[in-house]
Amino acid sequence: MYAMMGRGDAALASLDVLLNKYVKANTLYAESGPVIETPLAAMASIQELCLQYWNGILRVFPAVPSKWKDVSFNQFLADGGI
Image (cartoon, rainbow, N blue to C red; front, side):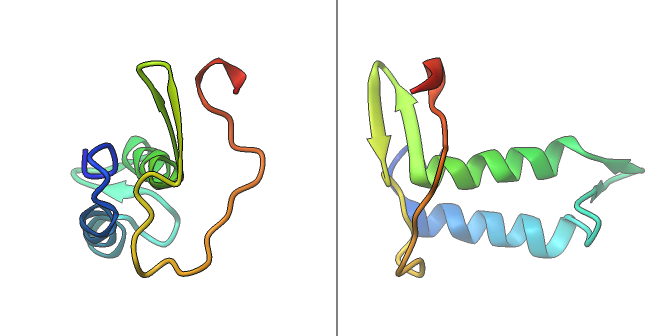
């Protein structure tokens, strides 16, 4: 949600909590047992910081956190293969 609002620093802070507190070194998330969906959602959230496509508009680097001084991507695809 923060990425969609253009609030990259807040999005990164939320991702840091998720990745540092809940996601394990093997990329699984622990609740009552290991699950895979949450780490995959985290990676999708990271992509949303760099590339978004909604309402027919492609947004490039819409919510890059200020800590990311040199960010790039290669071969990301948006909806429709754009």
